[in-house]
Image 1 (cartoon, rainbow, N blue to C red):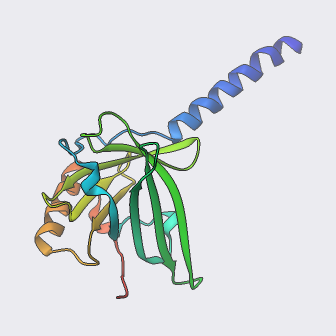
Image 2: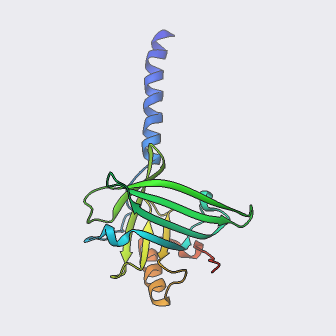
Image 3: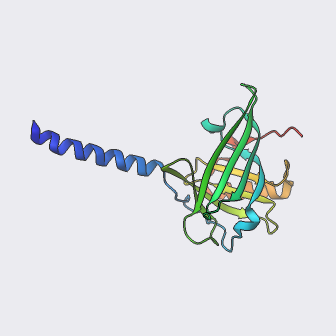
Length: 180
């Protein structure tokens, strides 16, 4: 029995460790490519969430914004805010983002609950940094962001087409309401 414990405990801990590492993947979906020549300084500031999938952590929320600012240590402060229209209350979550590779490649990892990190990949952005298509590490995570509460139809269609080509089911997108 003692030998069993000596083997079972490390194996169990190893499996649990692998499960935790796998759950905090900072990859990018197959077929998706992060924006190169990315300018992080131009990306900072407030973004309105235009569309997303139905995530547990954003369920029943509208008026959702994400604000990015530079931390003194060079990481990026992520401040997400939205209104839960069922509970009739504002919710806010503050996290941190770091670049996976070079700062010129729009592949980041974000954490709201360290040490768990998730992929944050900007795969399309207009030249003026007004509209962005962001995906996570798998086809379960996607966001359409804008500097304004609305997005031009041409940009919307461009982002939807790109997402479909990668494999996203864009029919499942929730279009976020913004009360102005």
